[in-house]
Image (cartoon, one colour):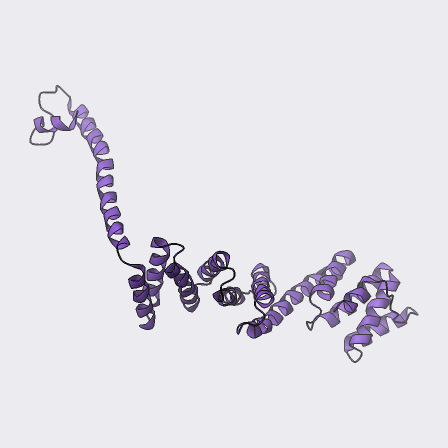
Length: 295
């Protein structure tokens, strides 16, 4: 039934003189409803497209100033939407660039840390040499930092925080954000080292000495400036001694005594070796000695 034939339908919307049964009439009406639905959708879609076209006529500087005004009024959500609109309608423009900075700041202020990282990372990718890239890396690092879980859980977010702060420090050493990034990085690395120690102790308790050594080694090599390195050296003394690798055990104790002579960890390491008739003695060819000579 074509659209022109609709005029021959009866008062109730059912075709007259067609010879259709009641059931067939219902089926016919259902078909017409299905055919009409796409046209209604197209009409609605067309209206939305027209509305968006109307938005496209707004100059980017006007939208940007509106976003700033909303931000100043404390309407952070509305301001965020305005800057998102600029980024969508005028990508790669100077106003889009400024909008990304505002989006990162606004999302961070609202506690939307994944969105902050997305905006910040996009800015750094598009404008790697821009002076605002330092601020973007700082916000990304701060966003990860605020999501760091406790030490018993997976530390993937903590490692991302370390990566963002490290990138900031290396690429922008003179930035005003670098001193705080260095402070935060020390906290992040201490947590990562703490996680390695936790897992290492778990393996040591179960006499899986090789796995334990790998964890303690990570602390000594990667996180030497953290408070956990003293215990890591003692645990290496313990684990190597249990395996019968006495020279490495002696080296771990000797390095511990040389760097932290007044700690309880060194006293315990010395006592452990002394019970077996050994003394701390450093092997200069050991990876432990080389690790400490490299700093």
